[in-house]
Length: 198
Image 1 (tube, one colour):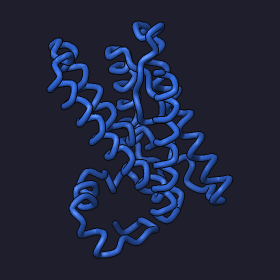
Image 2: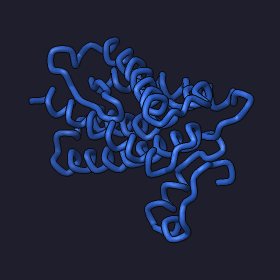
Image 3: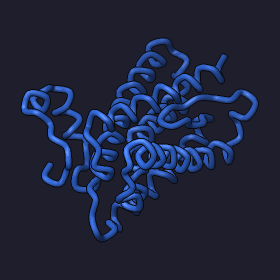
């Protein structure tokens, strides 16, 4: 964890949840460097493309790290594909603006953008699993639907951690401040999804 600017107490680091999340964190990629990491950029582009494709296949549109449906356009694959890409840039710009305006952190923006798509990796994995359930036409079974929701929640927690870690690494914020940003945006996204689904 050498290059990170935050300290995690030994007591916190020994927690089961944090240990598990740290094992799922690509620490060598999510770190500010002077030279661009070409492999990280390629990996990020792959995540963006796959995320757009599986949003289209699932008939879902993203809102930050969440997913919902718009009945009138849920069968418009191109819309869902490009909405995933747009969501990526909007989400990044909002976080960048918060860091600049409220925390006066302007550094490492380019590096942050180059690897920002990695926080969507758990989302893409969830979309893949969800499409598998759809393709097998078993999503309507109650057990499968509950299991699908559990997977979605677990992967959202993973994404929120990756986002928190990235903000801390690139913007040199305390982990508590990074977590506040992540949770507030996630709660805001959930609230908007809920309102749109009413």
